[in-house]
Image (cartoon, rainbow, N blue to C red; front, side, top):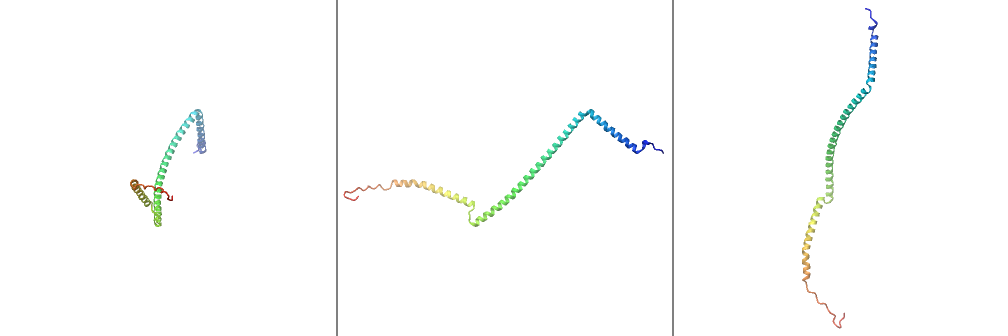
Length: 156
């Protein structure tokens, strides 16, 4: 069978390329006609996509911040617990060393201060109760001795 020139593969490729070219020119012409309307529609669509993307990013950021705050809180709690244990161990060792050296503890010093204050208060109370007796005793003591007068002819 004889083949026609229209059925050649190269002719079909040329026809397809021609159709693609014409479709492109048609789209270009249509864009020129509708120009600003299409541009404005694209800008509007782009703004909508940007807004959605920004909201999603903000939500993701908020979630990340919440997770980091949780991690920080948990870490802080663990660190504080470990620090508290370390501090207790240090305090116990220092207290034992001071005890071996004979230094009184803070509780012992506080108890001693309380005893001293109680004794001072007791002495003050006893002193104020005894004070009127002493002054009363002085008032009722022996009468004053008469003064010695110069005797005539005596040394004086």
